[in-house]
Image (cartoon, rainbow, N blue to C red; front, side, top):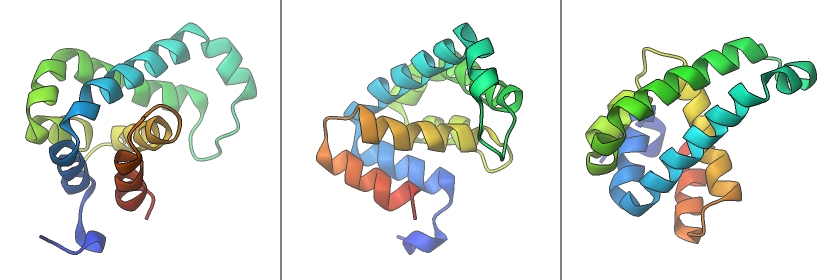
Length: 126
């Protein structure tokens, strides 16, 4: 195994899936719920948006891209760490920034597994 500093987002997400396959359906459902909420309340989010790196419209676009991939590949993502990591964590695409953010927030606010929370902290916040 590579040192953690050498792991790509694809490597990290594949490892997370392999260690915690039971969390993946819950995580994907949470991401879809957040995407729906962003679209449903986009005017309110746009008015209060203060994330300087991206405009709200850019963030919404990333959410929509993630949503489309999850809707198309959800069953395969649940079964395969390779599909999960390749579809959501491609290094050629900014959607990974949205998904990384959602993984961290899912772990902090929704996961009941302390080990999953620690793994997310180790892999995605270093």
